[in-house]
Length: 437
Image 1 (cartoon, rainbow, N blue to C red):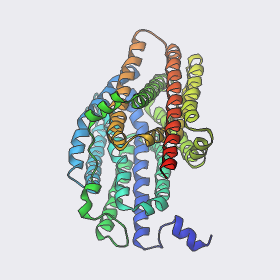
Image 2 (tube, one colour):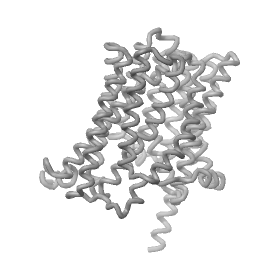
Image 3 (tube, rainbow, N blue to C red):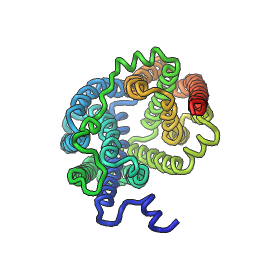
Image 4 (cartoon, rainbow, N blue to C red):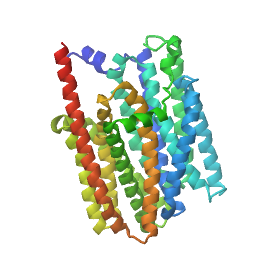
């Protein structure tokens, strides 16, 4: 393959062309956004422990209730604004919020409630600011361009996900945790600059296959009916199984997160030490995720099939719980949590998306929205209270780890059945297509 053919197929246009500029700014945008988020996430985990690991169920409940309030408001705004404009307003709003957090923490104002507010706030930030990035990218690039250029843009996010935890550990230890807010503001200002440049290029429509204002409805976020999603899930055994799979995943995730909070609270006395630990966990997880997504995801799913993939991670996590039941120490919980998170990003999340490929359009949008919001966040909140209840009964972290093992077994079996069902349905669809031809 000649250099020119390689460039045309895999790289943006020459330096200075509209396509090159838009890829450059999209790269900077995604890099800065994920660096900002992953720099603040260790601080969020620290804030979850500030008021006591035994009270973390309230944080998960607050996050769930906040989602129920914010999602309809955001849906209302998204139906009236272009994705780019909505994002610009959101990032300016979030930047002002972070400045306010810095001022309040720096001056010791409202410290009894501020950690709670920040924990919930960052969860909302993650849901909207980051998830909408790709919605905006789809608005800018044509289908042909997206296949050629999205890998480059994703690399920017990957670098940001690596840099964020490194900055969190260094800045919190050298200058105090308040410095993370200032650094995050700087990165979000770079996000706003990048987004502004992208909107300017999109508006000029020079050499880019952007969508015209006539198709404004395609640029707006699709409003999804949660009540209709509930009906679809109730009436479909496949969607009920998928909901159970997600619910068990959130239960296991919450149990691991709460176990970690209790162990970390016991292991470290200073906040900077805890932030450094959380940063290291995020750094290793993100590095493994990048490697796995590049070299493992497609190959493993293609070679062993979806059923095995959706079973393997729960089985490994179950073994992790077995070890944790005997050794409730920092090293073990860190390894199990990294395995769980990286396994989710590398295999389970792509696997969940594949499960929806045999669903019809209505199920993909309405049922998926219900599962990804109400089931996922509701499962977090419910699992948090179950864990807190077990602690209040006087059960140790070791005993709770043993209790989690049957949950993991059901989770693994559910994943196996779903994978088999998806594979069988996909074969039937292909057979029907051949018969039609």
